Length: 289
Image (tube, rainbow, N blue to C red; front, side, top):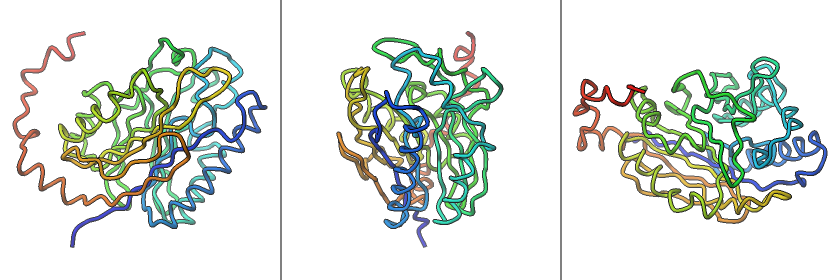
């Protein structure tokens, strides 16, 4: 029998203005995602990932210390605990991107991975941190990740995470492949005019080079008052041949669902022997600094 997993991606616009009180913004976005997770489960999704920093706006459009108040501990914070309950309730694997507090003043852009029985499996911390125009001031908010490229053994398969700007770096995607990832999720917040031409180029290329499935998530719409550009949605799944299997709306909330035949990974790898033919002994320049 083919090993088919139904994946789900959630893209969601802000449900409260970013000028609202932080606790109101956060709670409204959590409530919205709780409902959307339930809908994804009704559609048969077995593993679901949300967008980068899912319970708030993309606040990195400005440098303001008030946004530090959105941080939570992982796994001991309230959102991780809630998501563990939802994963168990719906029997669904969840990838939950959040703003993590490690120590007071030490913060990461992270994603918790929760198994379908509600067990917290671990987290990924965004490795590559941008700091650039037109409003991606992430070094003000996040330390670079320090947990490497973990792959999590879930009820549905081996899941890896790469967050937003990470996708511009093929080295980490290769590490995820070598670590055994079958599905790699890339929760993002990216705008038209900057990266849209790369959106359906880089990640299918990672899928082909490393022969795994990719779930790419991007939030939709404009976020005031910054209006750094249109978050262009278009969340999608692609397979190890780089074929896009399902795609979301450009400008609206959406739940993208696709059936991922994990047996295709072996089939493709038996044709394209990229891992066999690698030459690590010839790649010293990659780590020469």
